[in-house]
Image 1: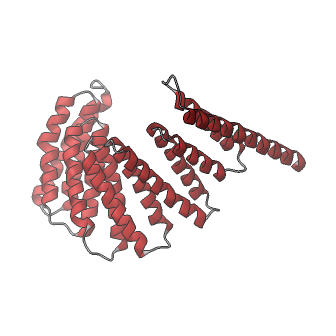
Image 2: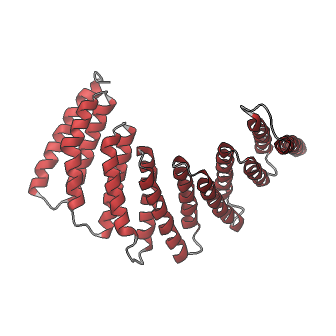
Image 3: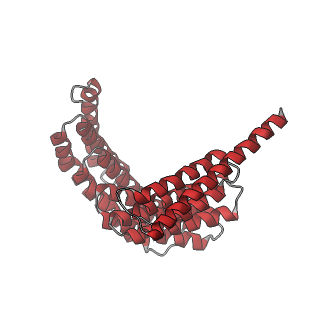
Length: 326
């Protein structure tokens, strides 16, 4: 709040810091970190104003300080390594401005970070570290652009991240890290395409993400991380397929999810509940179902009952084992 004593204390500190950094910038005009520190300082000042309910002051800080500093940062002739640092700074600030509900200030910064990534994404390099760093930044920036409402730019960045992770996976086919990153990006593409109203393409993207997760799990089924990530992928398919009204797609994802946890009674019971919810969702807001839909609904209810019985059987076995151990 505006009357918050911490707000009263931090604003002059940030103003003084910004002024001192401006003086240093005049004395050392080639210093990257000074300019970036100025940029961060004035962004936090704008965010403080916004959080205190003083939106006019926040917007004025962005116009008079943040935007000119972003322009100066973008004018720097930076090497590739420094481009990554610039992208990280700009992405972080754009995200922070979004969280502070300063979208008009955050969106141009995010777009400028996207322009930097796009300028480097096609650069021929054998530096795998640079490729992967650029991929992770493109994915994070895609999320920020999606929040800020620029869906075409978000999709462009997500697709750039996909290309970069594919390049890294091709260079190191045995690396699970880059394949995992690729699965994350496909999920991002799915979310952006859904927001763009492209439901079929969105589901295709979620399925591709799940396919990669399944490959990773099958290659190392002892990995708890791979098992949980695959489970989350099935969960996303359940969610988005249900929203699309793809009942068979939802049921297939639930069946695959069940196979992941043959000895986990709690998770099997959760799958049972989800099959029941699927049957209920089919009829929500509708008076009549077709004969085919009624048949499918009965099939899902039967699956719910079957997985419930499986869950109870697993629970009984676990109880007997615990008794035997005692």
